[in-house]
Length: 261
Ligand code: IPE
Ligand code: IPE
Ligand code: MG
Image 1 (cartoon, rainbow, N blue to C red):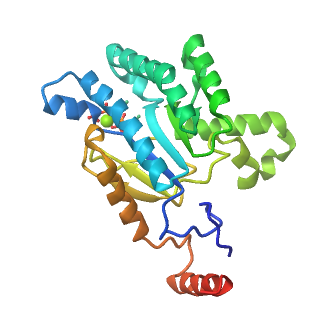
Image 2 (cartoon, protein in one colour):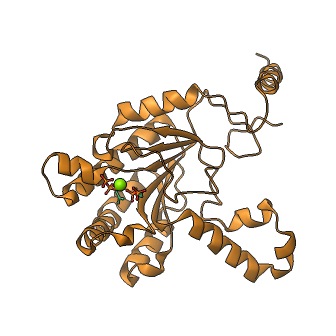
C-alpha cells in the first residue's frame, strides 16, 4: 500500500484533505427556471454563470481537477430549440471565457464525441486546449456529447487499432491510457445537484471508487457554501478500496511514523 496524493483505485488518497479531483453533474437548470415561471433556457444561462463561480471556488480551495457534465450523448433527445441554445452557450463560453481562464492559469479541456459538433466549434475547442495546455492552477474539463459507455468503447477501438495482439489478454492498465481522462487522477468526489440519484452515463469507468454526494439544490442555486458542504461530507468518509478499517488505521499509523509525526 502506498500513500499517494493522487486518487486511484490502487492507492489510498487521504480524505482529510481537499479532494484533488471533483466531478459534477450539473442538474436542475430547467426546474430552477420553471419554478420561477421563466423559460428553461434562462436556467441554462444562470447555470453557465455558476460554472464560472464554482471553478474559481475550486481553484481557491486547492482542487486540481474539476470535471463538469455539460451535455450528455442522450441530451440530443431534447427539443431542438433547447439543444441549439445549449450549443450557443457553449460557443459563447469558448469565445469569452477561455482567454480569462488562460489569464488565471486554468487549463481547459473538452471530452466527448466531437464528431457531432460543427467544424468551427471543434476548431475553437482545439485552439482553447492548445492555448491553455501548460497551465497548472486547475484543469477544467467539460464533458460535452460525452457518455461513459462511449468512452470505454472508443478506448477499446483505439487499443484494437494500436495493439490488436493484446486484445484477448487485455488488462485495465492496457485500456486506461486510451480513456478520455487518462491524464487526470480518478475523481475523489462526485457531486450531483438537482435531487436525482443516478450517474446518467457520466464517467462510468473512472467513478468506480469515487465518493458520491447528492444534493437537492438545483445547479443555478449551487454556490461556494454548497461546495464546502460536499467537501466536508467527503472529508468525513473512509475510503477503503476493498480493505478493512483496521488495515487503514495501521496504514495511517505507518504513514505518520514515516514522516515523524
Ligand atoms: C442540466 O439541467 C443541464 C443539462 C442537462 C444540459 P437540466 O436541463 O437537466 O434541468 P432539469 O433536470 O430539467 O431541471
Ligand atoms: C445529466 O442530466 C446530464 C447533464 C447534466 C449534462 P440529465 O438531466 O440529462 O439526466 P437524466 O436524463 O435526468 O438522467
Ligand atoms: Mg436534468
